[in-house]
Image (cartoon, rainbow, N blue to C red; front, side, top):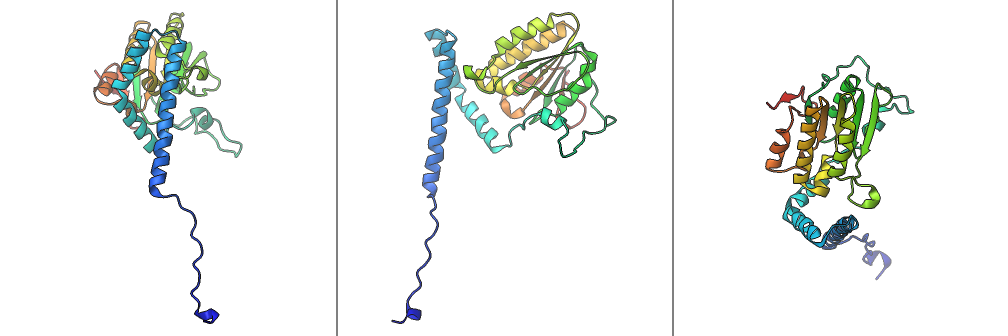
Length: 265
């Protein structure tokens, strides 16, 4: 057989991971991360001096709402996450980008005694409200995993950072600890403008019930002291009747950039 008559050898095909192996690897990685997260949470509670009975109650509570948390995690993976921070968007880059004109329309300012909830995937309109309102208060408090950079401005600005993890090494601050810090600040002379975009962190680590109790307390405390509250929250962070329970706590509710807030009265 001459060379032209010989069948040509096919070049080797690139190695491809079988579909079932890809699925198995993804499943194993998620399984590992789930166990790791659960053990970290148990260790975190144990390090805070929880009794056996308290640990049992905490674990049972997490098991009871596990399906909701898994669904929330699945949706957060499918949808784009909250981007990093307003601070990097607010500062002009070295490439010569500039901020919008100061004459651009801003949302109406929030006044003493008002509480506003903003439904948005990432903190945008709530930050606009914060910037438009802070001049009317001697003090602004930011409760956030990544506090927005407000730059220089009138009054005092106090940040209460909240880590995205319940790990003690990450410096996680629970709703009860945040309430203690806020109570001290609200008791000072003069009204306080409180901004919060940490509800997702609270829901994932302490559950919706604890989070709703914290928000209810904060709304009542702000109203009693003639202060104001702006909260940004991702609607995907709560399910079922918890959404209505949260929104009924506020005087006004806004759908991100969909126009002025509406009254819930």
